Amino acid sequence: MTAVLDSHPEAPALPRARTARTSGLFLALGALLVVMVLVAAGRGHLDVPPMQVLGSILHRVGLDVGPLPEHPQGDATLWNVRFPRVALAVLVGASLATAGALMQGVFGNPLAEPSVVGVSTGAAFAASVSIVFSLAFAGSWTTPLLAFAGGLVTTLLVYVMSRSDGRTEVVTLVLTGIAVNAVCSAGMALMLFLGDTAAREEIVFWQLGSLNGSRWQHVGIVLPFVVAGLVGAAVIARRLDVLALGDRAARHVGIDVERLRLVAIVLVALLTAAAVSFAGIIGFVGLVVPHLVRMVVGPGHRVLVPASALGGAVLLLAADLVARTAVESADLPIGMLTSLVGGPFFFWLLRRTRRSAGGWA
Amino acid sequence: MLRVQDVVVAYGERRVLDGVSLEVSPGELVALVGPNGAGKSTLMGVMSGDVKPQRGHASVDGVDVAAWRAKDLARRRAVLTQEQRLAFGFSAVDVVRMGRAPWARTDREDEDDRVVAESMLRTDVVHLAAQPFPTLSGGEKARTSFARVLAQETELVLLDEPTAALDLRHQDQVLAEARALALGGRAVVAVVHDLSVAAAYADRMAVLHGGAVVADGVPRDVLRPDLVGEVYEHPVDVVEHGGRLLVVPHRLHTTPTPQEETPWSSAR
Image (tube, rainbow over all chains, first blue to last red; front, side, top):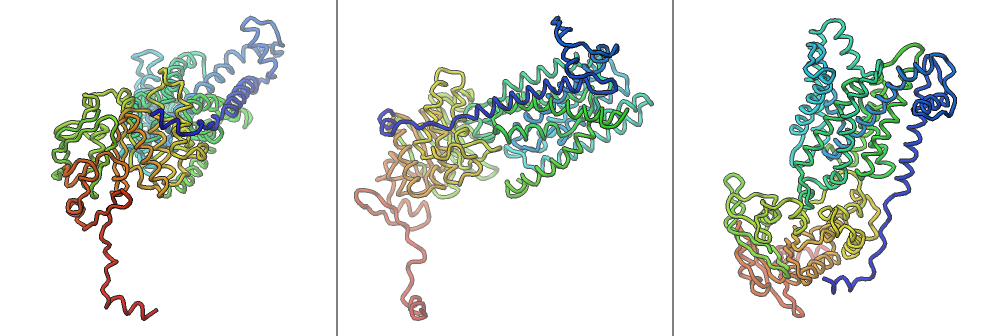
């Protein structure tokens, strides 16, 4: 062996991994997230300038620096209304984008996304069941748990139905998504029909997706789901790269493909449930964010997963800010906004994928 | 190192492998040859653990390939598949790095960069390192994937048609590297279509025909015109040129009768 190696000249220098771009992206996203939090929390019916928002936060953590909100109701508004909503937007955005990145890795297909393949609808359907029948077997955890179960079942279903020979073709995936979405939408329609007025209102809210009425209690329930999902995603990120080689080659380099898949699917369900439980169906975040991140730093999952989480948080914060403030004294459904942007993006991606894959493969 | 014992694989009624036994020892390059549909790829699948045989088994270091943990097996054998697919636009160097996956979180992880660079040098793909893998040509993909297999640094290397998409220079280069692996003490199995090329590099040739090994030995013993002619159902000459064996098939279109030839030449 050595004799052969020695016959070759000195090993060449490989192109360095794009570390500068990667750290640049993380810095930019991190800074953007901080700025967005300060701006978004301040904007609304009662305006608080970003510096005063920062001051309010610093005072809360025991640092007496920076100006406090001038308005007498400012501090209360921030802590009771704005911050829970901002926190939920951050968590939901991070969950959705990470779920998208994971799902694309598992399916080996850049078009996989919780709302596209019907996982969000499945989770929302299961959650709406808990509302209509006033289920509360696990207290305030009932709805998120049911959403998780619904998300898990739909993800598994889509996975089993759309895969053949170790990969998922675009056309199969999209058509499976249509079928799953149709069935779950029918289920939600049934729940709408069965529910009383209050339940109906809640379900409709969900179908549209909204962060209106977020409370700290919601944040507390969603947080463990999101943390578990994000940590799990970071742990399996490196192995997801190898999955891009296809099932067989991934196995040849020592990946327990079936187990990895199962773990990833559970994580996707966990993250989707976290997002859907209190915010409803917010589509396309998981499609747009990972794609943009890939364009900047390439497809390596060790960077893609955390960068998508950050990017998703920023994007959803921005979208929610628009939803709250675009129309005077009206709270637009955020799901409507993301779909408005995400739909055309999906179409563009579909065209591009078709061209590069030379057909519908 | 690698031992295949009495393996039977059937798809429905059709027996693709019918009682195949084969042994490969460290330090030898075994060329697996045979006509299309002889069961070469299926045998490679059995050896790499992708195909479960109905009878018999393949074992690596005395343990059935099905009994190995995926990661432990990946530290002992690497596989180059016929088709190279990749989801997402990973660069060529990223793909070669994937070959280091079995050594993640071990002491050998420290050598990743050196091993990856050397592997790419040996398959002549260093200049492609930063390019997205999906944009490479078929031959470039094959060489990059071969670099990935080299980077895995295993004692057993299985190569399913490593030279199929390669030009003349790279074909010889890849097989020379395979030969070098064997010289370094590894066990190498390669499916090769070109019999002359196989004869030039292999220590042993195993001829698969109709799901069975019909010949197994040094190239000079295996490449007899009668045997090759029968297996491929096509007459061949085996000639020696400068100490090398060349298998020359009879060309179907180069035996024109003079009557056929005349009108052509006169027409011109």
